[in-house]
Amino acid sequence: MQEAASATSQAELFAIAAAVLGGCSLRGGEGSVIGVIIGAALMQVLQNAITLIDWIPDNIQYAVIGAVIIAGAVSDEGFRRLVLRRRAGAP
Image (cartoon, rainbow, N blue to C red; front, side, top):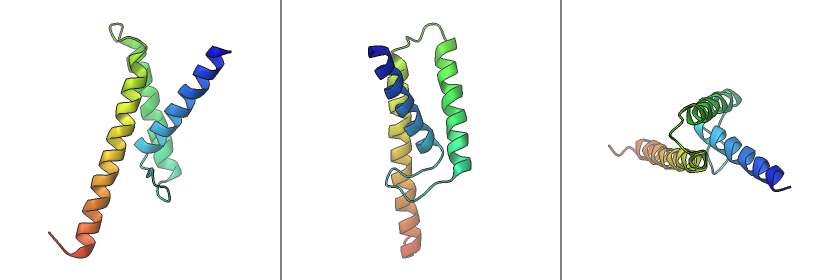
């Protein structure tokens, strides 16, 4: 039973990271299907790379995925601020 719960939470984490990588805003209302597909492909490549590199422990997968989500959220906020600044006319 523990393995099923772990697999489900891992799938949810990968889905969120794929959506963030694909350009979906964590606030909602933005993003595209193509972007999510590209994000899912990038997450699969990242997961395969972690699996193939023998000296990286499997437990570090969650830390890497968390870092991807944080990086996506930070870049989303930076991009949003840049757009707002340009719309306001400030350099």
